[in-house]
Image (cartoon, rainbow, N blue to C red; front, side):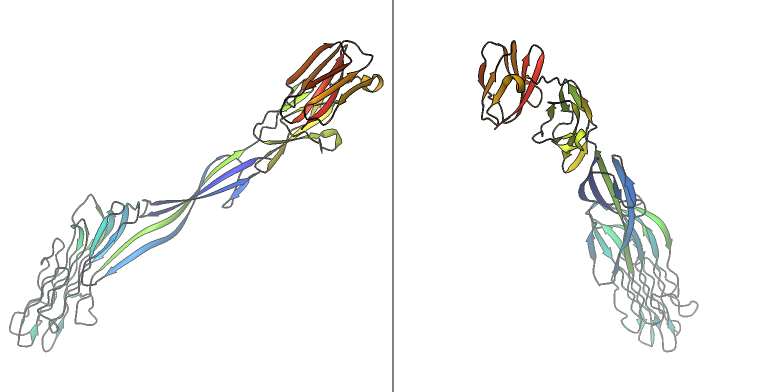
Length: 427
């Protein structure tokens, strides 16, 4: 069984068309096998991606009578921009209303720096001649003229613009005000807000005798080509105030700022497979995987646990088949069974009399032998390393102190090439 370590990073991308803003969020998961993520099953390490379009973030700015501003969201590099200049107000006499001109319309993509301060100017619709002929419209439109004989010119509409650091980047001019459509006097509507500045720009409204009111139309401009990429634009037209149905004031301008917010998910997947191989040296088996928990098993006894055998190595005392179970972060894996057939245990301990005591022990060990010759003693730890050795014992009684770490140790008693092995637990 394999261990899978999963790091899931959520990246939310806010963008205009192909340009993106990136946010990060992470999720860590550990599992022991293959992992299914967002409808796909992964069995190998790698970095995987998935994305979902969340929404378009739109912010509309309407006329407020003053400048408005906002900071570009963090790491945003591009904004969709759509600007509409304000319409001019109607002209008026005792008999007929005449609409003012419409403001310009411009649309494109604006290159910005994250956190930049954007100033928004939304033009005011021009006032009608009968309402306020002396009013100067916010956004650059000027007042209409009038003669107090029942004929009045409408005020020009204000421009709509975006500024960065106080400088214009793109602007949509306001429409001119409607002139008086009749009468003996020449009553001219006010000029609309310019596409290039705060004063004038669009012409006045229509001539009272030979022209229809409202032929002052707003123009557009994008002043810094490196920042603004034009998508589409229209100059304003005559006889088309923003609020023509009311036939009084021109419609105010509007600025629409938007970007697309996507969610991009990144799966950083690592599958860690434990090394279940085992090395054999004589009757000692050693697991090659380090840094995990071990439990040795008796394959010949239905993989039963061998009590006390939880070290990296196992020294077999009898021939048989053995395996080791590895436990890493709760994920268990088992090696194949390895056959040991090199253990040669001469049972002279029972018939002749070899005693090893006490067991368990705190360190002191006694070994008594009777009627055997050429006796040597070797004590090995769970890794198969020799920690005590006695050769050519002349006495039938031997004692020594096992000054080692607590654990399981094996005492090999060798007489003329025949070996008896005893397992001792050191507390």
